[in-house]
Image (cartoon, rainbow, N blue to C red; front, side):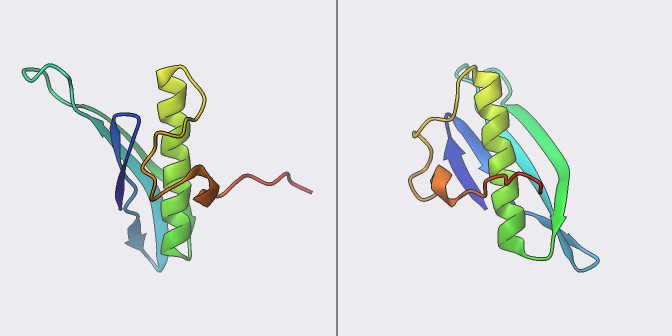
Length: 95
């Protein structure tokens, strides 16, 4: 599953092993200089889930946080309209 966010392509396709989906995010940003390599960042084994959609959403959320942190701003609305911040899971306080 891929989508674009703030100049990055996020591949949040989970790995499936031992009956679980392992969330991870691969982020790629093409360099504006055609002679330079693309910049890439990978977060692996963020968490495991029984459901593929939950693993994908967790990877998207992690990727967006990482991109916003490294771009020096908070989440913006220029993400792919097919995936909005409202679609991402939110953390709930522990009880």
